[in-house]
Image (cartoon, rainbow, N blue to C red; front, side, top):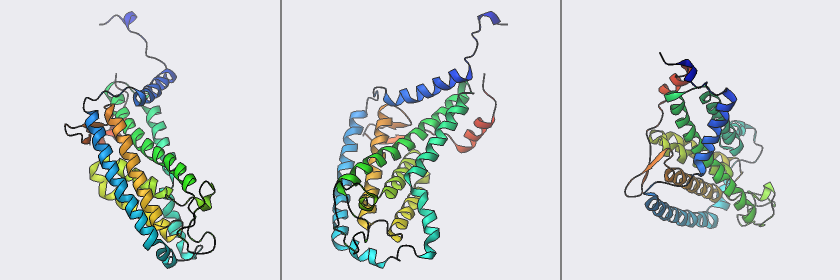
Length: 281
Protein backbone atom coordinates (compact mmCIF):
# COMPACT_ATOMS: atom_id res chain seq x y z
CA UNK A 1 0.00 0.00 0.00
CA UNK A 2 1.36 3.47 -0.78
CA UNK A 3 2.02 5.84 2.05
CA UNK A 4 -1.02 8.14 2.02
CA UNK A 5 1.01 10.87 3.62
CA UNK A 6 3.10 11.15 0.46
CA UNK A 7 0.12 11.45 -1.92
CA UNK A 8 -0.52 15.07 -2.84
CA UNK A 9 -4.18 16.08 -2.56
CA UNK A 10 -6.01 16.88 -5.76
CA UNK A 11 -6.45 20.52 -6.57
CA UNK A 12 -9.87 22.03 -5.93
CA UNK A 13 -12.41 22.24 -8.73
CA UNK A 14 -11.99 26.03 -9.26
CA UNK A 15 -8.22 25.52 -9.51
CA UNK A 16 -8.74 22.73 -12.02
CA UNK A 17 -11.10 24.93 -14.05
CA UNK A 18 -8.60 27.79 -14.18
CA UNK A 19 -5.88 25.34 -15.22
CA UNK A 20 -8.00 23.83 -18.00
CA UNK A 21 -9.00 27.21 -19.40
CA UNK A 22 -5.47 28.57 -19.13
CA UNK A 23 -3.96 25.63 -20.99
CA UNK A 24 -6.65 25.77 -23.66
CA UNK A 25 -5.87 29.41 -24.36
CA UNK A 26 -2.10 29.01 -24.06
CA UNK A 27 -1.98 26.29 -26.71
CA UNK A 28 -3.45 28.70 -29.26
CA UNK A 29 -0.66 31.25 -28.91
CA UNK A 30 2.35 29.02 -28.37
CA UNK A 31 5.10 29.10 -30.97
CA UNK A 32 4.45 26.95 -34.05
CA UNK A 33 6.45 23.75 -33.91
CA UNK A 34 5.48 21.59 -36.87
CA UNK A 35 8.48 20.89 -39.10
CA UNK A 36 6.32 20.99 -42.26
CA UNK A 37 4.56 24.28 -41.54
CA UNK A 38 6.49 26.14 -44.26
CA UNK A 39 5.18 23.75 -46.93
CA UNK A 40 1.67 24.14 -45.53
CA UNK A 41 2.00 27.93 -45.56
CA UNK A 42 3.03 27.90 -49.22
CA UNK A 43 0.11 25.67 -50.09
CA UNK A 44 -2.30 27.87 -48.14
CA UNK A 45 -1.01 30.99 -49.91
CA UNK A 46 -1.33 29.34 -53.31
CA UNK A 47 -4.82 28.00 -52.72
CA UNK A 48 -6.03 31.25 -51.12
CA UNK A 49 -4.69 33.26 -54.06
CA UNK A 50 -6.38 31.10 -56.69
CA UNK A 51 -9.64 30.91 -54.74
CA UNK A 52 -9.65 34.66 -54.18
CA UNK A 53 -8.90 35.43 -57.83
CA UNK A 54 -11.63 33.10 -59.09
CA UNK A 55 -14.08 34.36 -56.50
CA UNK A 56 -13.37 38.02 -57.25
CA UNK A 57 -13.87 37.41 -60.97
CA UNK A 58 -17.20 35.69 -60.30
CA UNK A 59 -18.32 38.53 -58.01
CA UNK A 60 -17.58 41.09 -60.73
CA UNK A 61 -19.44 39.07 -63.38
CA UNK A 62 -22.47 38.67 -61.12
CA UNK A 63 -22.45 42.36 -60.24
CA UNK A 64 -22.35 43.39 -63.89
CA UNK A 65 -24.63 40.79 -65.45
CA UNK A 66 -26.95 39.23 -62.89
CA UNK A 67 -27.47 41.12 -59.61
CA UNK A 68 -29.98 43.64 -60.90
CA UNK A 69 -32.06 41.00 -62.68
CA UNK A 70 -32.07 38.48 -59.84
CA UNK A 71 -33.35 40.77 -57.10
CA UNK A 72 -36.31 41.84 -59.25
CA UNK A 73 -37.39 38.18 -59.49
CA UNK A 74 -37.57 37.74 -55.71
CA UNK A 75 -40.79 38.21 -53.68
CA UNK A 76 -41.33 41.59 -52.07
CA UNK A 77 -40.01 42.21 -48.57
CA UNK A 78 -42.62 41.46 -45.92
CA UNK A 79 -44.43 38.81 -47.98
CA UNK A 80 -46.43 36.74 -45.49
CA UNK A 81 -45.48 33.26 -46.70
CA UNK A 82 -41.76 33.97 -46.23
CA UNK A 83 -41.91 33.45 -42.45
CA UNK A 84 -40.33 29.94 -42.59
CA UNK A 85 -37.43 31.40 -44.60
CA UNK A 86 -36.96 34.10 -41.96
CA UNK A 87 -36.67 31.41 -39.28
CA UNK A 88 -34.34 29.26 -41.37
CA UNK A 89 -31.96 32.11 -42.19
CA UNK A 90 -31.24 32.66 -38.50
CA UNK A 91 -29.35 29.35 -38.45
CA UNK A 92 -26.64 31.19 -40.36
CA UNK A 93 -26.58 34.33 -38.21
CA UNK A 94 -23.11 34.88 -36.79
CA UNK A 95 -24.31 35.74 -33.27
CA UNK A 96 -26.37 32.56 -33.05
CA UNK A 97 -23.61 30.27 -34.33
CA UNK A 98 -20.95 31.85 -32.11
CA UNK A 99 -23.17 31.70 -29.04
CA UNK A 100 -23.79 27.97 -29.59
CA UNK A 101 -20.10 27.22 -30.15
CA UNK A 102 -19.11 29.40 -27.20
CA UNK A 103 -21.62 27.67 -24.92
CA UNK A 104 -20.30 24.28 -26.03
CA UNK A 105 -16.76 25.39 -25.16
CA UNK A 106 -17.89 26.47 -21.70
CA UNK A 107 -19.63 23.14 -21.09
CA UNK A 108 -16.54 21.20 -22.18
CA UNK A 109 -14.35 23.25 -19.82
CA UNK A 110 -16.74 22.78 -16.90
CA UNK A 111 -17.08 19.02 -17.42
CA UNK A 112 -13.40 18.38 -18.18
CA UNK A 113 -12.35 20.21 -15.02
CA UNK A 114 -14.09 17.52 -12.97
CA UNK A 115 -12.35 14.68 -14.81
CA UNK A 116 -8.86 13.26 -14.73
CA UNK A 117 -6.57 11.11 -16.82
CA UNK A 118 -7.58 9.80 -20.22
CA UNK A 119 -11.20 10.96 -19.89
CA UNK A 120 -10.12 14.56 -19.48
CA UNK A 121 -7.63 14.28 -22.34
CA UNK A 122 -10.31 12.89 -24.64
CA UNK A 123 -12.79 15.62 -23.79
CA UNK A 124 -10.17 18.36 -24.11
CA UNK A 125 -9.28 17.02 -27.54
CA UNK A 126 -12.88 17.62 -28.54
CA UNK A 127 -12.62 21.07 -26.95
CA UNK A 128 -9.66 21.91 -29.18
CA UNK A 129 -11.78 21.07 -32.20
CA UNK A 130 -14.53 23.32 -30.89
CA UNK A 131 -11.95 26.09 -30.56
CA UNK A 132 -11.12 25.63 -34.23
CA UNK A 133 -14.79 25.91 -35.23
CA UNK A 134 -15.34 28.98 -33.06
CA UNK A 135 -12.23 30.83 -34.26
CA UNK A 136 -12.88 29.97 -37.92
CA UNK A 137 -16.26 31.68 -37.72
CA UNK A 138 -15.11 34.51 -35.43
CA UNK A 139 -12.11 35.51 -37.57
CA UNK A 140 -14.15 35.40 -40.77
CA UNK A 141 -16.90 37.52 -39.22
CA UNK A 142 -14.38 40.04 -37.91
CA UNK A 143 -12.86 40.47 -41.38
CA UNK A 144 -16.35 40.74 -42.84
CA UNK A 145 -17.34 43.61 -40.56
CA UNK A 146 -14.28 45.57 -41.70
CA UNK A 147 -15.04 44.87 -45.36
CA UNK A 148 -18.69 45.86 -44.98
CA UNK A 149 -17.65 49.22 -43.50
CA UNK A 150 -14.98 49.90 -46.12
CA UNK A 151 -17.10 48.89 -49.13
CA UNK A 152 -20.48 50.29 -48.05
CA UNK A 153 -22.65 48.56 -50.63
CA UNK A 154 -26.38 49.21 -50.42
CA UNK A 155 -28.72 46.29 -49.91
CA UNK A 156 -31.23 45.46 -52.68
CA UNK A 157 -33.62 48.35 -53.36
CA UNK A 158 -32.00 50.66 -50.81
CA UNK A 159 -32.47 54.08 -52.42
CA UNK A 160 -35.72 52.99 -54.08
CA UNK A 161 -34.48 51.11 -57.13
CA UNK A 162 -32.66 47.93 -58.17
CA UNK A 163 -29.20 49.46 -58.39
CA UNK A 164 -26.37 46.94 -57.89
CA UNK A 165 -23.86 49.82 -57.95
CA UNK A 166 -25.22 51.73 -54.97
CA UNK A 167 -22.08 52.25 -52.88
CA UNK A 168 -21.36 54.67 -50.04
CA UNK A 169 -18.00 53.58 -48.58
CA UNK A 170 -17.50 54.10 -44.82
CA UNK A 171 -21.22 54.79 -44.40
CA UNK A 172 -21.42 52.31 -41.53
CA UNK A 173 -25.16 51.55 -41.34
CA UNK A 174 -26.99 48.27 -41.88
CA UNK A 175 -28.54 49.53 -45.10
CA UNK A 176 -25.06 49.83 -46.60
CA UNK A 177 -23.59 46.60 -45.24
CA UNK A 178 -24.48 44.27 -48.09
CA UNK A 179 -21.06 43.16 -49.35
CA UNK A 180 -20.07 40.57 -48.27
CA UNK A 181 -23.03 38.71 -46.76
CA UNK A 182 -22.39 37.97 -43.09
CA UNK A 183 -24.71 34.95 -43.09
CA UNK A 184 -22.89 33.46 -46.08
CA UNK A 185 -19.54 34.08 -44.37
CA UNK A 186 -20.70 32.34 -41.20
CA UNK A 187 -22.32 29.39 -42.98
CA UNK A 188 -19.40 28.70 -45.29
CA UNK A 189 -16.76 29.19 -42.59
CA UNK A 190 -18.62 26.71 -40.39
CA UNK A 191 -19.18 24.30 -43.29
CA UNK A 192 -15.50 24.34 -44.26
CA UNK A 193 -14.31 24.00 -40.65
CA UNK A 194 -16.61 21.09 -39.80
CA UNK A 195 -15.72 19.36 -43.08
CA UNK A 196 -12.01 19.87 -42.40
CA UNK A 197 -12.35 18.02 -39.09
CA UNK A 198 -14.93 15.43 -40.10
CA UNK A 199 -14.82 14.97 -43.90
CA UNK A 200 -17.83 12.63 -43.91
CA UNK A 201 -20.02 15.60 -42.97
CA UNK A 202 -18.92 17.62 -46.01
CA UNK A 203 -22.10 17.10 -48.07
CA UNK A 204 -24.38 17.88 -45.13
CA UNK A 205 -22.49 21.00 -44.10
CA UNK A 206 -22.16 22.53 -47.56
CA UNK A 207 -25.83 21.79 -48.23
CA UNK A 208 -26.60 23.76 -45.07
CA UNK A 209 -24.35 26.60 -46.27
CA UNK A 210 -26.01 26.78 -49.69
CA UNK A 211 -29.48 26.80 -48.10
CA UNK A 212 -28.49 29.74 -45.87
CA UNK A 213 -27.08 31.52 -48.93
CA UNK A 214 -30.37 31.07 -50.80
CA UNK A 215 -32.42 32.40 -47.89
CA UNK A 216 -30.49 35.67 -48.05
CA UNK A 217 -31.42 36.06 -51.71
CA UNK A 218 -35.08 35.18 -51.26
CA UNK A 219 -35.40 37.64 -48.38
CA UNK A 220 -33.82 40.40 -50.49
CA UNK A 221 -31.13 40.88 -47.87
CA UNK A 222 -28.31 40.53 -50.41
CA UNK A 223 -27.36 40.42 -54.05
CA UNK A 224 -25.95 37.19 -55.57
CA UNK A 225 -22.48 38.74 -55.66
CA UNK A 226 -22.75 39.51 -51.92
CA UNK A 227 -23.34 35.89 -50.93
CA UNK A 228 -20.65 34.69 -53.35
CA UNK A 229 -18.15 37.05 -51.73
CA UNK A 230 -19.32 35.88 -48.31
CA UNK A 231 -18.73 32.25 -49.19
CA UNK A 232 -15.22 33.15 -50.34
CA UNK A 233 -14.35 35.09 -47.18
CA UNK A 234 -15.71 32.33 -44.94
CA UNK A 235 -13.74 29.55 -46.58
CA UNK A 236 -10.46 31.49 -46.78
CA UNK A 237 -10.85 32.49 -43.12
CA UNK A 238 -11.41 28.89 -42.03
CA UNK A 239 -8.43 27.78 -44.13
CA UNK A 240 -6.19 30.34 -42.40
CA UNK A 241 -7.29 29.23 -38.93
CA UNK A 242 -6.77 25.58 -39.92
CA UNK A 243 -3.16 26.41 -40.80
CA UNK A 244 -2.70 28.17 -37.45
CA UNK A 245 -3.86 25.04 -35.62
CA UNK A 246 -1.87 22.62 -37.79
CA UNK A 247 1.36 24.60 -37.33
CA UNK A 248 0.93 24.09 -33.57
CA UNK A 249 0.01 20.40 -33.90
CA UNK A 250 -3.56 21.06 -32.77
CA UNK A 251 -6.35 18.91 -34.27
CA UNK A 252 -4.53 18.68 -37.63
CA UNK A 253 -1.41 17.10 -39.11
CA UNK A 254 0.67 18.31 -42.06
CA UNK A 255 1.76 15.87 -44.74
CA UNK A 256 5.07 16.03 -46.58
CA UNK A 257 3.45 17.86 -49.52
CA UNK A 258 2.01 20.54 -47.22
CA UNK A 259 -1.52 19.15 -47.19
CA UNK A 260 -3.34 19.58 -43.89
CA UNK A 261 -5.37 16.62 -42.68
CA UNK A 262 -7.40 16.09 -39.50
CA UNK A 263 -5.98 14.06 -36.66
CA UNK A 264 -8.16 11.15 -35.51
CA UNK A 265 -11.11 12.77 -33.79
CA UNK A 266 -13.49 11.87 -31.01
CA UNK A 267 -16.31 9.56 -32.02
CA UNK A 268 -19.72 10.84 -30.80
CA UNK A 269 -20.53 7.57 -29.01
CA UNK A 270 -17.24 7.53 -27.16
CA UNK A 271 -17.55 11.20 -26.22
CA UNK A 272 -21.02 10.55 -24.80
CA UNK A 273 -19.70 7.69 -22.67
CA UNK A 274 -16.90 9.91 -21.36
CA UNK A 275 -19.33 12.68 -20.39
CA UNK A 276 -21.59 10.24 -18.57
CA UNK A 277 -18.91 8.19 -16.90
CA UNK A 278 -17.15 8.82 -13.58
CA UNK A 279 -13.85 10.64 -13.40
CA UNK A 280 -10.83 8.48 -14.01
CA UNK A 281 -8.31 8.12 -11.17
